[in-house]
Image (cartoon, rainbow over all chains, first blue to last red; front, side, top):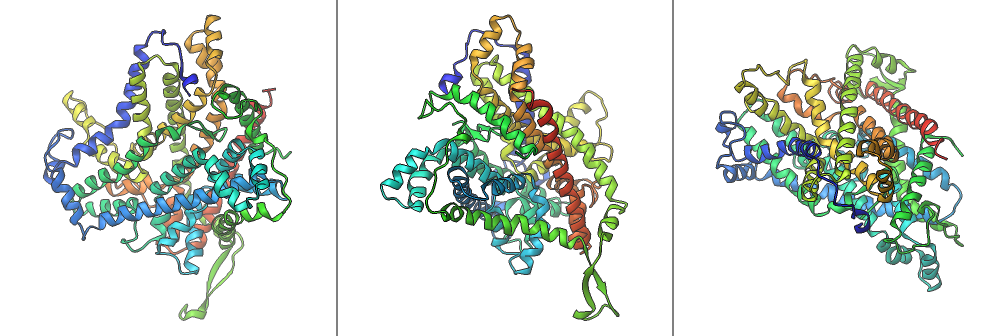
Length: 285
Length: 344
């Protein structure tokens, strides 16, 4: 990293480059800045004061949001954390197992399995949502936590990434050594392989976590009970209510702000894991 | 070797990766391995069942939640309900073979073609603008002609929207589009210009496109930027010594090098375009110009859950899935032939 980053500092900084980059940053930050300001306004002020002028009602709005139907909003937040956390953790573990098998073993059918998984990467998950719903309805799992969790456990892209990480990070000699020392295959995987793949697996986890956290159509279709909703579906419902009941807009705006705080925090902390080379499937950390 | 787009892509990726490994030897534990990691020798195993055991959970879930739904959608798309008698009672409604009638019904629905054209127009706006901006920003960051603190600030700011779910992004922009809230309308008003109504029928496509561009540029920028970072700087230094300008270095060296990444981001953006759903659904309460069938996927949703016609919905799903496959594989195959075979 440091070696690659050592670029000559002598070249002059360019005003055009700086301006363009700052314009890009301003465009990307505008809605975030706006929601920060807007959630400090009372519902009367939201549409009457200048849009970028802050007010003093942030804590009132947060209290109102918390009181909305006995803290339903926080339940959505907890649901989202459950869906994204458990979903991404399980999916990462399963991807690691599959990726390890594909990278480090020779077996009949390997090429076929790998090609099927690659094709799976290109299948738009959203298209699957309706048949997934119908199949889960047959076994009575729709409108439960499982309806959102189970489909998120499988990620073809995660398996594809894990295969590349396993191939790159786990030397065959170490596997041999572990076997000679008498460790079983499962033990070798847990104690030797997983730690060596750690950096790559963090990336797989983050990808899945964000994908599930941002997912809308799957829970929108699967869930009817609003106590099971994740934030995206919950906020969408709040916005719909706002159309007939404009005082709800303050809750919507405050809810939107609160919903992006955890992800932005996670994302800023784990920034370095996001250096993804999509074409090579690798990460640089 | 099967000549799928993926195979080309993998080959190209391996080739670029090989180049990278030589630059990264300082950070890897085995500096002697200059071969691509994908080529490292798999371990011969004595017990043949082991790899299958490791693959079992993944393959089981893949079958249940990817393969089975695809097959089931295909099956449903060829079925229909036959109502006998008055249609009362459990036995009077039976599922029968429908041939391709669901497809013809779905494709001749007056709402179908407009939604397809809309999504094509949307894709033509979103994909080039998003990837063009992402490439430009990545090149600007990589050129290092901005103070380091500033460039890391901009990099993080532009990537930040990736952390914002599409529903929340649409919600925020939706408010910013409202004339009474929008700072743009305010600013234009001040200088005496009538601002366009962003949620009116003539602008709403761009309003939705803007949300997608806002949300996707940063991620694609990081992907391209990462590819740029993996190129040894000595390559640029020698070009500079030969008198190449930054612009021609970008055009002649950097863009060709990030081509595989651009192709991947293009394919993923195309797939994302075909499944636009969350943005228009979220903007819908704010604008009466977004119909229930604004995009093909919204039509699928309406057919399945508003009209309870899961057969038409399944047929439309299959059409969208097939279109996605043809577009992505077709594109990968096309660029595979043109771009990568000349690499050697």
